[in-house]
Length: 428
Ligand SMILES: *Cc1c(COP(=O)(O)O)cnc(C)c1O
Image (tube, rainbow, N blue to C red):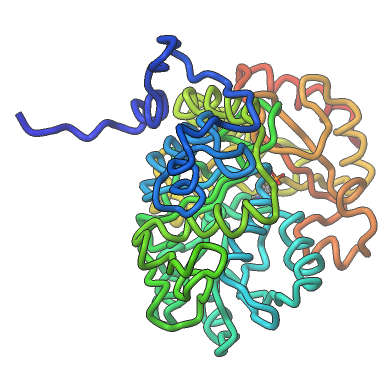
């Protein structure tokens, strides 16, 4: 009988996990320990020297984290993964592995606001420089590449409007210039989009959002696609040159198609320290088991809400890729046929005051700055996250005075719509 490859839902429940060999525990235990006993001195030496894999200290590796890593690597189709404390920690470790002071990378302008801050401000302190490009014009990426460029960064389903990106078109630019393509797949999750299948080399996630899925635990992850040749150009010395801290090992030579995940762990996580707690890793593993069910419900609910909003008198526009007449609908159908995600924006004809009134009168929706919770969430960016910007800056960022952003949860669609209807009735 030919061997069957398990499907996505089976992997979401089982990948990386097995009953605990000593206790028989069926759910993955929370290995709430900082450190692990060595068998003897030779064993300890082999672990420290990277000659043998094994647990030493939870900042570097832990059995609960290992299950999370194997599971997400399987769902994304990667060779290995590294789980860390947050999505931002994942981004920091990716760039720490490829950048030297004075280097640059090209990033899409349409990104999560926190990533725009991290790249544009915090990274400057390391002398790492971001160059912004328009994700709908791959030429704007290509035009800014020079000999100090080390990578390209995009979101598969981009903030703030929930727009699908032509990953393959950007991957072609990356390939032409021998650069790794790094894709933030947080908003889509691997249930909707698997960027490695479209030419990405590294995928990152904020596990805090749809993968954990319940708005209760912070986490981030780096998935190594195993596709990039880190030795060819000599531009990635962390991977292609002997490492003095590991007796001269060349990581790409020693670890081949999962060398990036190893480097991010033993040179990045080990020395910079943003480890995920075993408890959060456990919570996120549990969340992932229902990812396919939740994600489909998120998408179906969001489609129903967007369709309803479009017919409302007080609503000026709705930006949801799943609507048949949306300019992004063709890319959605090509990259994410199962659904268009659950985060989108719409505009109120009544502008700033209308946005504030709507948010203040919603009851089922929670007014907060997050996405990807089981609960429906709302934010009026102009009066909250983007209030320090001028009106022109707000509009350029897709956060004009009339814009409301929703992250649709997995409640009953009829209840979500009823809540919006009663709040909208109070808006002028
Ligand atoms: C939230 C988020 C991040 C940052 O993740 P944290 O877990 O909050 O550090 C990065 N990218 C996207 C798309 C996000 O939504």
